[in-house]
Amino acid sequence: MGGIVVGYLATPEGRAALEAAVEEARRHDSRVVVVVSARPDEAPEQRALAEQALAQVETELTDGGIPHELRLLDGGDVADDLIGTAEEIDAQLVVIGLRRRSPVGKLILGANAQRVLFDAPCPVLTVKPAAS
Image 1: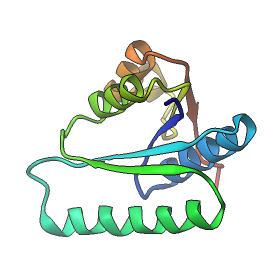
Image 2: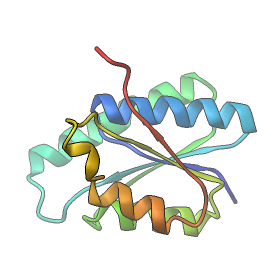
Image 3: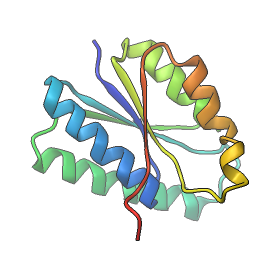
């Protein structure tokens, strides 16, 4: 199967990750598998917002001619969802967005990002949104 797995949230970091995944997909003639992790106890309004964001991503990818698949997963663990999807599709790359951190915060990488970096079955590309 293969493809590029991207963790997506409707945030600047999520947008940066999606844009990088699309660029890589074009470069390698690959598909993009967009993963959004929902918590099982998530409020219905939050779930609706996630579904709305995915609908926008669907339109963008379709209009851009990018082969894709969208997954709204209810596992509640972002790292597990990304790693599991990467293993399932035999991904060639995982793309995640990182937020900018303070000098002290740079000493500690987020737990989910760290798990994806260490446990993904393929290379991981981390991206940051452009400075504003």
